[in-house]
Image (cartoon, rainbow, N blue to C red; front, side, top):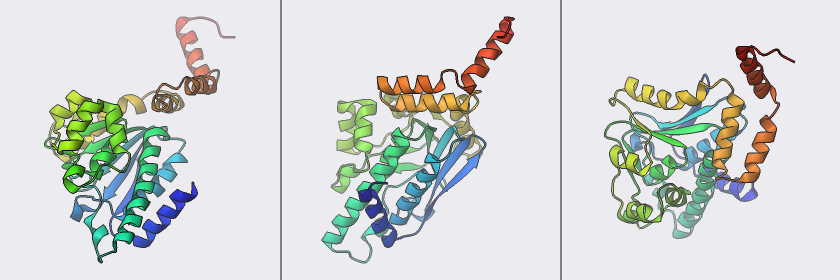
Length: 276
């Protein structure tokens, strides 16, 4: 871990706060659960450290294929917790805290976006606001509950994105359309998000059963593939942004490996050709 990130995590741990981020596994799908329901899962400094720690664990996870990022109690994430401003910290303390949050959250969301081999999906229920909207941009896919909204409210708060979400939004939808969202703070519902390519599925209703089914259904085509290592390699290849060297490394790592040879033997058996 870079020393700057470690120092920033230490500062946030000292600041503390309530809430938690936990990691759960169900078969080939891992779930990151944001839990601070009194603040619609807004992230406290302690939760930002929790999230970073859980991503550390996911980087060491060699088995999961899918990753679901969601909030507790019918809400995704309301950004940074206003408890950060408690105890009347000085302007210097606030600036130090802001820099630490920026360092930790940009690193954490960047690792989800670029380094994890998991095919990831954000489950947007209720509201994804401010930093929560940024968090929703770090996954590959997004599934919405009916009535959910994503909103970059930074400009209305006298801010700009700081957790990497602004750059990811521009990459996803282009400069002009990103400016409309970033500069106006307009709420984005499912239909408009789907048109922009920011929504991939919508649950049939906002019931827990339907929402969970929509999330599982979105990840199912990936986790049901016979060779998890190939899917994880494909995810990293896609995350490389078209890097030809990354494609070469992925291909050479998979070629003639266990999964590749097992698939070859299966095809040859089905075609009736003798094995060698």
